[in-house]
Length: 347
Image (cartoon, rainbow, N blue to C red; front, top):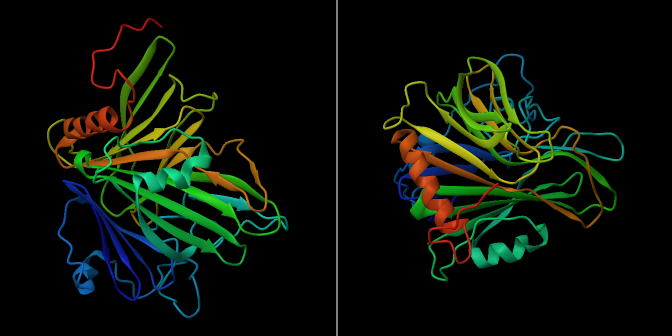
């Protein structure tokens, strides 16, 4: 379910059976991430009921760069964002990096519009991508997609964000599309599929590494500062680093505690990074590996990112696993073997 709180600037809440993902349009026009966790009740008729989710800012912290003189309390380095870019004060892992013909790398995307799509409408919008993605066989499916359009007015770029909500599986998927509305080429150096800015302690990272003949070894690290990266640079998702990670507090176990999973529906070079900033916030990004990546985007062309699968569980790793099994079985696997025991496959 997608709930919209109508205000001077809209608020968006993506509701699954047991989780809520919240964001709003800031006074600067940026999309601010508010919450991802256990399901909360939202009064769509009363915007003031959402106010406790917003971090109050009286001044920009320390030696950060303020966004504008008119809003000296806002620094993009300290705001939880849905899309991080370069050149306007945000020095954390970016969602998007572009280079323009004059050598500039500064971009700034603010809100334009939104619409709620059926999965059929979403698939028609994304048909040109040629990428695999989630689906629903039921015409009456409750799954819906929130389609948000941001723009960099100075450089005439448009960034479309797709948030698809599979309420029954407690899954939200994310992907993006960058359109070049200008009359010059733009070079994409990085374009992620998902970004999560978290104020809670999600310092424990579970990832799955390995090699030929010994794949999927579960490993955990605690990020006290700096950055952790899980990635592949082999041209495939590979047995070396699976494109699936779990974020959690240190006390989460198999049957209790909060955790967030992210899996990339992509078989090529991938990149997942968790960064802890100097203010104790965490930023997580997932998408195509930016190493050696460079894409010339011609005027009028669009670039699509792979779909990232996000899910939250308050019932530990086992709860997360069950949600993903259900999602993959119902919304990824296709064809005659979807609900049948499959033949043995010899590799």
